[in-house]
Figure 1 (cartoon, rainbow, N blue to C red):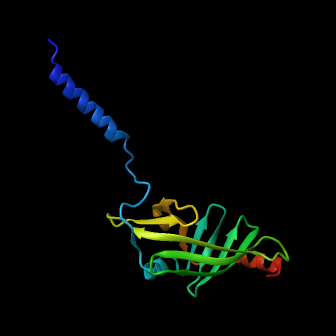
Figure 2: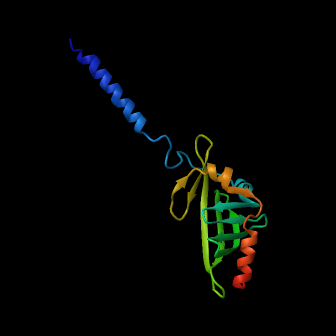
Figure 3: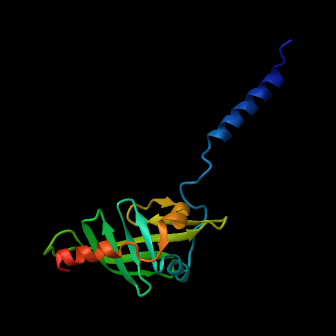
Length: 158
């Protein structure tokens, strides 16, 4: 004999399980946005190189910024952190000899979610991401771009 009530409970449970399984386990943005202190942002980046896919940037302890992009572009400027958790650089980027350069400012916002995890927001795109791999692998002590930056500074007469 067909038991409608048991079958309905089974189907409801199966549908619920599928919905739970289909729900993404990672959020696209932090559930709470408590700013990381400026002092903490400075501690994270100061004296380190942030390795990018096609270059990198050095965040000097004295506030100097040096960037390298695709071995042909060099950025020279300054960086700072705000009390609201923003990391910013202001640099002039050069890509050729006697180039006037292009002034660029980039910022990333740092917040902590309800579980204590740090999130970053690219202020240009407004995209959020968790920089776990970035902090553990791509942020390295010391100036890893110095030789290439110095070479381009000489080549471009900066």
